[in-house]
Amino acid sequence: MPSITSLGARIIFNSRGSKTIEVDVTVDRKFSGRACAPSGASVGKLEAQSFPDNRPEKALAAFNANRRKFLGLDASDPKAVYDVLRRIDKTDNYSKIGGSVAYALSIAAVDAAARAKGAPLFRLLNPKKPYHFPFPLGNIIGGGAHAGPGTPDIQEILACPVGAKNIVQALEMNFNLHKETRKVIESIDSRFTYGRGDEGAWAPNVTNDKALEIAQKAVENCGYRLGKDMALGIDFASSSFWDEQNNVYNYARQGIKRDTGEQIEFANRLIADYKLVYAEDPVHEGDFESMAVLTKKNRGMLVTGDDMLVTNAGMVKKAVGYGACSGAILKVNQAGSLYDALEFAKECKKNNIGIITSHRSGESVDSHIAHIAVATGSKMIKTGVLGGERIAKLNELVRMSEYDLIAGMAELTPAI
Image (tube, rainbow, N blue to C red; front, side, top):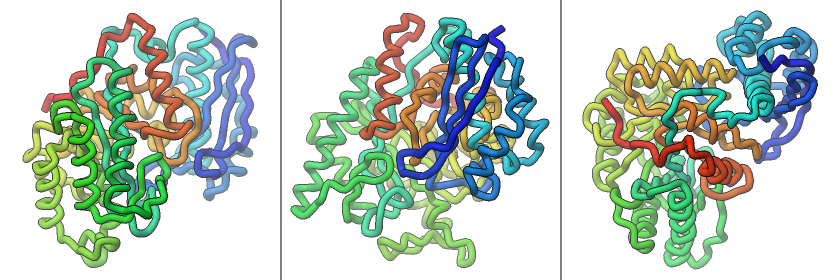
């Protein structure tokens, strides 16, 4: 087995210039792996806490105080790393050692193990074939927590090249649509400054409805058939504008408030009007009943939980009890360790819930999630479109196309 022989960590900076933790793991005194923990702007209440007391320095100190406990572990076994993490930190959300340490350490370990074995990471994580490429889900128009005032309340309008035959064609289609979206925005706003949000999406000063019209127009201008060649998706991030005190969704930037029934009606209208293949967090994270209504109504697409599920296997079981969610976001750092995330993926597959492996808005140039997406049989990978930290994941998918082990694109129709 590839045995952990040394570990190290440091504080570095993510794509937003915020501090985060990076970990190095060496196995057999020869092979090294490295991983950097990402962070999100739109954060679920139940996800892992990145740093003890929100201080990266305390996470680093906790790592250094405990790192010798990981020596001698089998780096290829995420459960072995998880077990030691849990002996150190028994809190529900890794608030003692920090979810950033749990993430970076567990990913760096399997990265080192894959190098020691001379195997691609996806095969180490899942030795069973066949493998398929996920469809790249690219953010083309941004708002909400990812962009500034004046942009849409809706956090993301996304593109999914459902007609693509291979991963390179899929990426090229997303790039083309991203470029065309800018041109459409320019045609209605001569003062558009090419502003972009955290994940590389254009951030125009338009309403939610206008943003969707722009995306649809860009699809048509590219010569793509909406819903056939190129499909759209929406990340509502509804918890970010849910007013719990008044029980309304407050679309403050557009000056509209919707009660729960109106929010369901709004989401259903957008799904139908724009032939959406994907709707993420269309209601707030605690409303499993409304999520079930939307899931039942829209069986031909992925009604997806992010803040609602927080990459937690127990929350998947809860959603299944309600009949909520046909899709689930997998963000390793939401769960904490890689083992936590893989257990979440098993629970999703057991219940025929489509997995969407995702980046975070605060990212590094690491490309591990490309392998995690393939290893977990993800239907989609959500990585953004532009920006070095986004392109790093996409280019890794291109490199992975050289492996004959991966047989084409994933099947998108969810099995419900």
